[in-house]
Image (cartoon, rainbow, N blue to C red; front, side):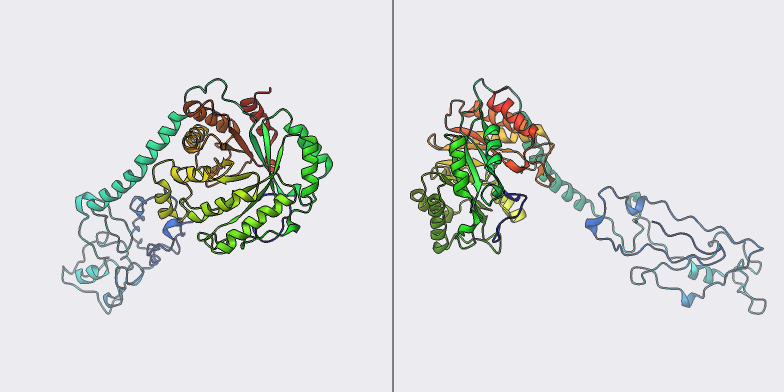
Length: 482
């Protein structure tokens, strides 16, 4: 969970215009603006026109007899053409084909006594003034218009197309499968088992909440399936310790919840960022750090919490140090709960994604099972899925539910996360990741895999970002109390 545990204060320790034409027609045209492209490739819009498709520059009209002729540049002073010069050579006035044939014959030169005549150019001068012409483009292809532009060879185009196909085809197949996964009707009875959970922000233990807030919370949760509250009491320090000043009102909250919501358990939600992906973070490979985390768990249990809920991220699939930590935590708390990463939607997808992005977001199904066998409760963070449509997101949740059910022991509570927050960013689209789509996905996955699973529920993330529509959808689609 990369969002803030609470919007309030928290303890420290953590967690492009074209150039205009200038001058009268008799003047030398300005140097061409076509040259090395100074815009970074990544900044160009994907649908930008190819320079080859741009309209050619208009051909200059011949100067009229009443206008003053422009001086003709000497051949020796003409700038060199090509990418080394950075600019195009000046074009001759009117072009070589616009002037009438000189009266002196093909070998006559300009008169040095009468002054230059713009209509009387020798072939040598005309040839020197004309821009160099390259060979015709092969296969009738148009030139790019850029200095040094080259046509991509046919084999290069085929290779690029092949790469695109290799990337897009599996993606399209996977997305189609998710859409199909969202079809059908859930089985009857696939509703709440009264084992749901709710993540609560840090305001509940730092003094910002009051008795009136607890009363309102009790009214909100009445007649729902919520049995566990994950109350943010951290974050942990990077060395695994937890200052008691992080949760000064914990005892008050626990007492008030037990009084107004009998049977509801209050767990301390602890977490931190992990190395090696995060440079300045917790190092689970250090035994001293793991021992300190265990001591922190005992500390919050001593403060009255009914259990401890851990959210350590980013946790890479196969991390043996995390499994060792869970083994050490079991005797330290009467109730051990964890937030879990999503499971590979495709075999070994976490390895591919980790190599491509440096962030292996998913766990293998095998590793998920190894974690689930070591805890009393595991909650899948089944949001932030990058899915752009409700149908794809719902199908993704259905798949995740089935994958998790297949490897979670029946003695372990399995909870599927519901997005009770609304953000629009890469990885999460509020119009797609909705509570109705998630609940339908959960019910479809449960129906297909283990519809009679008793130790099963949903977990709502998070209280301070939830809307009335979120709560209404949860009660109508999952709890079925209205």
